[in-house]
Image 1 (cartoon, rainbow, N blue to C red):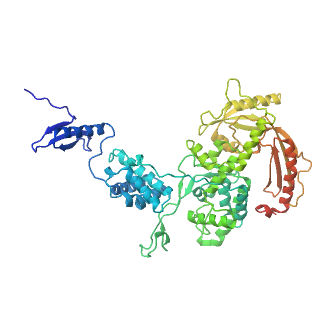
Image 2 (image 1 turned 135 degrees about the vertical axis):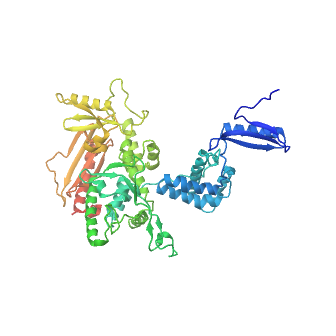
Image 3 (image 1 turned 120 degrees about the horizontal axis):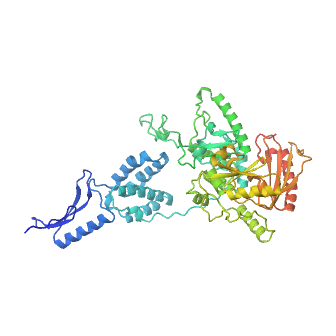
Length: 586
């Protein structure tokens, strides 16, 4: 009688000549193409049957660990960080990985067999790190690093599950950053005038560039005529090696013959990071002055000068070291008598200023270099609700509930005006440009452009308006005011009152005979002049040294009252420029 035979690949159980029961389970295919069959041996049949079924279940659910080298945590982390991560991530990222691996993970867990590592081992390590002085942030960095490393081990079948995905990460209480107030910013700018590389700190506080982005700027990235800075690279922290053969007995960074083995800059990591930013005219003037000062330094340095084209350099033309830059920031805080803070807090301050000014979110993302998918989270993190924001919000609520109801343009028939429930605007949207005589006004939504064109025709019979489709890149290169002018909301039809005066040095009124107050509907103003507050005023110094007083708002009487105060400050500012920190005034 013929015996039945198990089909190829099926598990088998049999009683061996050694008196033990044996089982074989096919779990996959080896690198050479032959079946990968795992052997199990037990004293009796029920035990071996149970073990075979468990291995089959593991094979069919999470998979079975790959046969071959028996990894320890130390050997796997070392292999991963040097041979897998290092060739594929940026310099700053691999620095963080190496600190976590060599200073925390290997000393704490290195002797464990990789396959035997448990979530509890990781959790005890995190607790021990914090008990011995490491911050929660450092422990969290170790957790993220080991999770990434073990994910790769799972992908390569050296592990079946990642214990770091199960372990509870160290709890981090995100510290609420307090951005600098307008008064503190003005004190910092007034003190920055007295130090070298003044424009470096103005860029940080006004534009919110990251430290690496500011130090990586080159003069080829600055368009003085258009008033635009192009951000496209970042400065890397140097990494030194001994140039003396390690004979000096110092750390590599302090070796008299140290050698920097890392490139100075790298391109921005994301498309959003590569961006053009409009620059206030005061900062453009400051950059021109900075360039002239750099020319004088080049003459003084003579043959010691190294020409690399950076905007901010050492006295001999070298790229600024981020560590040196950090210490200069701390010195600036002390000399300005401003509370201590991180250099990155200047970026939080710039983002909050954009919130106070009511800049549209799409433009904020562009200026700050945030990716579309992460921009909402980054705005929550960087834009802080200050007292000024709360006051502006309260004024809007009060105007809505107790003031006259503003008359706004209605959406086109059958079309719902875009609001919070609409999907986010695409990264590179088509713009709809309304041509109003010699003016061009860009909108993100077609219905806004069409409605403004129709209203223009009603207000000015015989002067029809047209709407053209432009791509965003064309507008930012050819349109007035670039990205700052793009409107993403329905234009407002409320009346805005303006008041304006200009004064020569010494306090003489310049624009005598001109209407000092006038009124127009809000949507006829350019974006940078628009306001929905009852009143707002400021004084500014023009490049030609005249001082302007500007007042605008929706409350006619408040504008009239504020105009007198603004003019008084403008006269005082024209006579005492140093009191207001004006650069090159006089």
